[in-house]
Length: 253
Image (cartoon, rainbow, N blue to C red; front, side):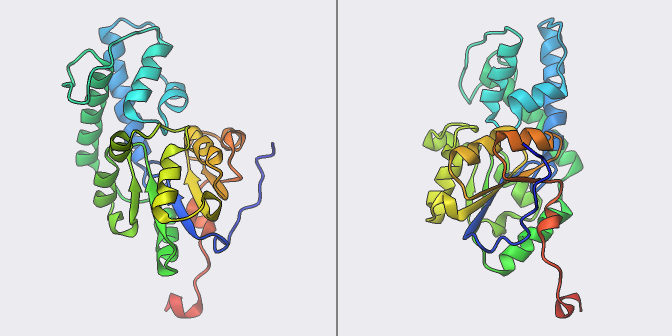
């Protein structure tokens, strides 16, 4: 499959847009990657795991997936079997849930220390779509999605937010299953074929494609354009700014 797909500049043929959060709207993926690396470096040292954590682990096992599913995937890749535990497990617990909660502590500290702002190109596109009254939603596996959206000043833009908290409440399967995107489509009252999806994760692209969404746009923040196309993206962009429409003379003034 050729990675040089044309960029669809006009999104007006569709009735709604769904965005992933981390790596699409905000650079929180960088904070997540830092938190995962710091946490698993610590865990692997504790367990004397010879194979160190790497970026390949993030993209293969963690990116776009729910936290505990990601933890289980990484541990399994190192031949480590732990009890699942419960979401209430303390970060010190030697369980999948406990380790996942420990990662969230790393992420929370990083977010508080560094803050977060949306990608300028993403913000520009969201503002243009909002001005046109295009219905928009966020579909994120993160349980911190509402906190991040609020910190980035974006939460009021999205009447539909399907996050890791809601997924747990509704027993929605993690990406690459299409459940979370399909739930968002139902919340918008639209057929998936009428909706555009923006995703930077291979698992997220596969999720949207499996759900039959009308246009799946991969956002390459490190996963690789060809990998996103192979997962089912119709096209790949490096920044959402390429999809914004030029300002009119009146708008420039």
